Length: 295
Image (tube, rainbow, N blue to C red; front, side, top):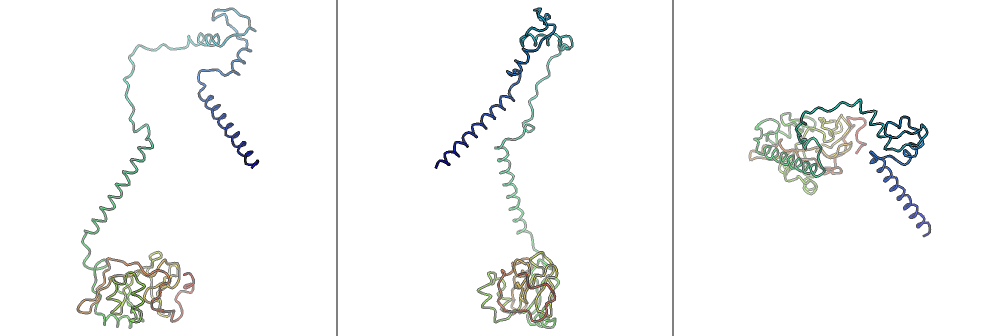
């Protein structure tokens, strides 16, 4: 306990010293028009020549008061000063408050108003985007990709992958055996349910990592991104690389004519890392020599 009291005493002494130093500095800064004691002592020891000009004839070694020195200085300066003219003073114009800076309260008030303005602008932009008519054709529209049977034939004839350029999408087959697991794993399952039950999945072509276009790898039967090595199985679930999730996908519907309708205006984020509803592993050599080991 003694060490605690000693420490407290030391801190108190340091605090008092800091307070004394701060008061000393304040006195120094405010000492305008007043002479310090050191200056007064030094002036008393200095002989002033010509003290008779201020009304008292003194010797060169006599002591002179501060008022006498000031009077002598005024006498010396009186001949060099230029008298003021008799013109009227200029009209006082108050300064603009904006040029004097802002207070903390003004800064906070303006910041709050600016944030509210930005929020309202963003909300207004979102409302206008919702009201803006969607395109009726091309990317961003709901596209009729074709009949389910024809699409599966295209997928199989192209080695398990079919690219549909109008919608910037990949179409692959989704195994019926994985539907039960997809229903419990995919939070977006209702939006893609009809397409999955028909046996196809529509995947957005870009990699969720940095947006590179992901090509297929016919030997491994995976999607393998050439930019940074992210890899996905045939239904777009992540298998390796720096991607934060699986490949994004589009909502799908199947109409009465058994045609697949894909809404390319709404992109659904892909499944999280670790999801593997199909259990598909690489079926051959990877197209990327450094892929698969970054997941």
